[in-house]
Image (cartoon, rainbow, N blue to C red; front, side, top):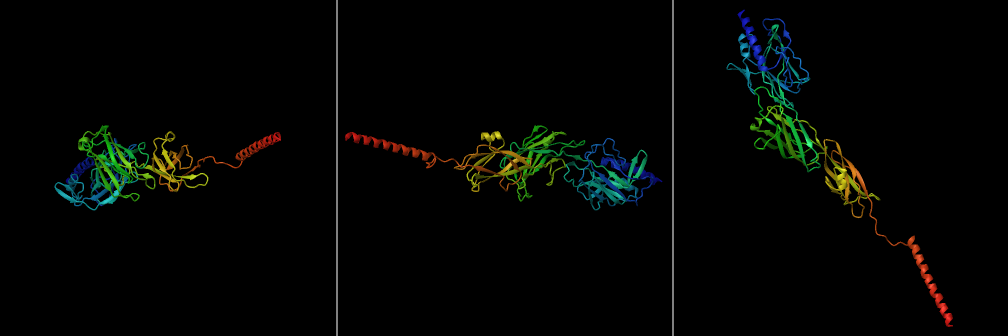
Length: 485
């Protein structure tokens, strides 16, 4: 009788301590009968993962919680389950130990009252289908549940490890009961995805600088929590090289070396057979972090140089925010909107015979006005022996194609210059065939003497005039001869 009373008292203490330690609700199918727990019955632990689950009507009594409207579940979060060895639930003293168990991250044991308890084999499962994973067919005992790999989720702070007993003592207005299928709702703070956009007004071709605006808002933290890390990580495309950056936090301009640090490392990750990949990491210093507030914007203007054109015409565009526990891995692809780049190939040829013409000079412009004025050329080129020009690496922004204006600036020797500008469309990727053929007409040569037509008539008239003149002379001579006679 005394044992039963003591067991019930310990159960109440344990239930309260579990709720406080986990900061979440439990739900379960329960054994409706009161009294001693059935330690031969197997149970389960189901974990439900949501972003910042501060639910006003949540009950910590072990029932399944109804997620409020707008609550966001998180898939892809790994949870690790381990049984705590050496705790016998048939011993009333064991329940006192359970309520005092602690675990240090990375450890292989749990501890209570100066004694350590070995942890069993790890069982790992990942949340899916609405942020849920269930560890089933569990024998009676005490289990450690902790959060593992968070995947590509922007988890600022992992949920605290917690202990669950099977069965679990639960309290409600109706009284106490034993739960065999426990549902847990561990809390997470999630970072803003952020955005990364290209200022393509400054980027027109390979060789130009590309400026990227990277920004995200700081998440709200819990009571007594501080920002231990703020920054961003950008694994650049092999076709980009780091140049410089500007950093602000909450609109305040930060100074390199004092308020933030920049680290640029060379990675060996291959992309389209190019292995020289740079990773740029920007982190705010402790001094500057002290002034940070929830919802403030962290912004980096990252300047890179476009060094080449990938075959598919797309230069990857991604980054990952760094906030407290969250640091992006190499697989992070935040706001992945690649910058598109393309080639344009034309051929210069004789209008009459179609022969290739060498030495024709062309320029490409962003607008018709620039083309007509012959100013602000993006790129220029001269036709080779085959009459072709390839304009390489024209930046298209985030579109698959873009219109430009083409104009001949110098014709091949002996040919007429084509004065009109022509609108062209450039598509992403490498150009392997001629997309436009432009004819040139030969210049008109100097006038040559002719023997037919008008020239022949002039010669005839000239001959007649000579004959007429000769006839006149003959008549005069005859008259003079007669007069002399």
